[in-house]
Amino acid sequence: MELKITNLSKTYPNGVVALNNVTLIISNGMFGLLGANGAGKSTLMRTIATLQEADSGSITLNGIDVLKEKDKVRQILGYLPQEFGLYPRVSAETLLDHLSQLKGIANAKQRKETVKALLQKTNLYEHRHKNLGGYSGGMKQRFGIAQALIGEPKLIIVDEPTAGLDPAERNRFHNLLSEISENIVVILSSHIVDDIESLCSHMAIINKGNVLISSTPSEAIRNIENRIWRKVIKKVELESYSKLNVISHKLVGGKVDLHVYADAIPDAGFEIIDPSLEDVYFSSILKHSQN
Image 1: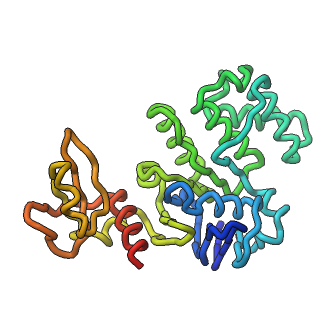
Image 2 (image 1 turned 180 degrees about the horizontal axis):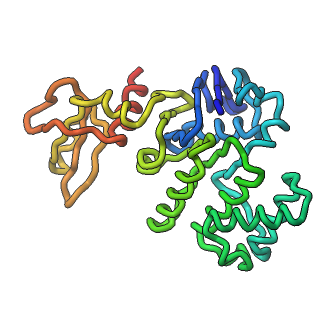
Image 3 (image 1 turned 30 degrees about the horizontal axis):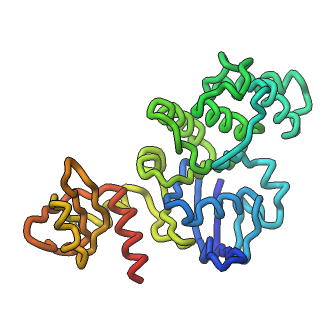
C-alpha cells in the first residue's frame, strides 16, 4: 500500500493555516506524525479519513482518489480519533457486533468469529461482557483499535492514542500498534516524542501546517550530529544565553539543563552531546521560526 499526499492545503475561515502544501509519501509500516497541539496533525488525519475537505492538493491510496472516492476509502480504512465516544452501558462484545454489522459483515457466524478475534488481539476477551463505562483509559483505547480493525483495513489512522495512559497501558498499546502495522499502513499522530521514536520506522515533523522534516528517526538524528551542545547553568543565568540558538531547557535538581544548536562550540563550558529525536524536533521548530 502507498498513501501519496501532494500539495495539500487547508485554511480555516478564521484565517488559521492548518495545512500548507503538505507533501508526503507513506508506505506499509508505522508512520509517525510529530507536532505540538495545533500544528495541523488532526486536520491532516481527518482529511485522510474523509471527514474533512481540503482547499487544494490531492491524496491517493493505491490509486484511489481519497478526496473524491470517499466510499472506496472507507471500505479499507480504520480510524481511531483523539476523542471518541462509547456507549457506557453496552458491553464491548455487543458494540463490536453492532459495528461489524454497520461495516457490512451480515453473516452472524462470521461476525461472532470476527468479534472474538478482535477482542483476543486487543487483550480484551476476558472483559468482553463488561460494560464499556467500566473500562480503564487504556482498555478504552484498545477497544478503539479493535473497532478500527473491523473489516481488515489496509490503512489505520491513530490520532494521539497514548495521551493520559499510564506507563503499563502505554507499553501494551505500543505492542499492539507494532503488531498490527507489519502488513498495513498505520499513521500515528502524536506530540509525544518517545511514541514516535520507539514505534515508527518513518516520520514527519509538522509545525503550523508545514512539514519540516520527513525521514526515518535515525536519519533525522544523524543530520544534526555534532551540532547539539549542552551546559548546566543556574536559573538566574538563563537570560544571558538568550542570544544563542537555545532549542530546549529543563529544570533538573534546581539547575537548568540547556541544549543549544550550533555548528561550533557556542560558549565556554558547553559540551557536545549525541542528539536525540527531541533535539531534532526542537531544532527544526527553531529553524522554522527563524525563516
